[in-house]
Length: 387
Image 1 (tube, rainbow, N blue to C red):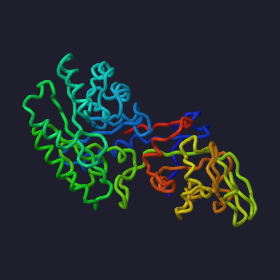
Image 2: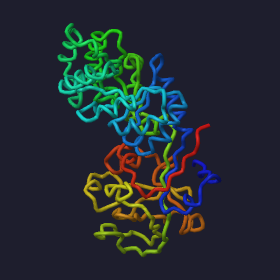
Image 3: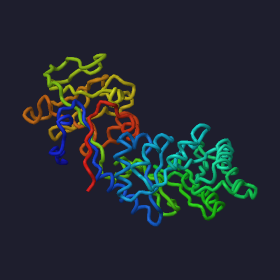
């Protein structure tokens, strides 16, 4: 069992909050340094899109910058603008690229567009023709069929002697579709395609791997790795023990502990019938807070597949969700927790060091990314400063 959170530096608002989220910035920095070691000779970036996976781009970005990150990836320009004061000398790449009307933001905040289509290439060349040289990156699709210039087009661009001198990419990148499955043959197929891209753009940095690809080994690292979920403590590779430190701990206050008899029903739809006399903890978290309805112990389609519902952690015990998760409330069966170990007003850990986020996510039929990025607005947040 992991020790309880140290709350000596917590504010009154945090101590009283119905929902609270603790973000361990020391663990975050350690995770980045771990991924930097795993990246070997490659530099290590930090992916902070989606408000740093739901944990706050300002504090997360500043911590990663102080840890040593000098390359950051965001999804949209406004994220880059928000990050810039916290990573003043970093290169900030915008994965969605650039479209008309965004030029001022890119130049003002010194953002690097990641160009992924012929339309964006044409527009960008017109922008630099008017405003002067500015760095960009080129995203090449090597089999994902998501964003990216087709491989053949990218290779043709590399050989095009007529391309403007003002088109000066500082990075070419691609993205693995199955990096979380080390045995997938698609990893090798994409690697071989990207090797052609890297060779064609000789002298320009190359990047193929996010968190999962970094674990595949040195041949996938190229010049720059782009870890995301691993920084935040999530699993990057399926079927492998997660080596990263937990960063986020979500807790909900127990509003009431009630006694219920065997045969009685619990929550909406009466989908849970108690098989024994039980003690139930009603807590102040629900799907409005990102604690998904699919985490319910019963009454949702996922339970028909045989996958068990979610558990929380309290009083040294894992406790299962009873019945359906509702908008603002969730009920946990705490019958097996000694009565003197918990009381109303205590907190149940929804995910964290004792209740790994990916274990919770699997109960919802999803991944840790979705739980983190779906955190609601009602959590009172506390940041534990990095050492």
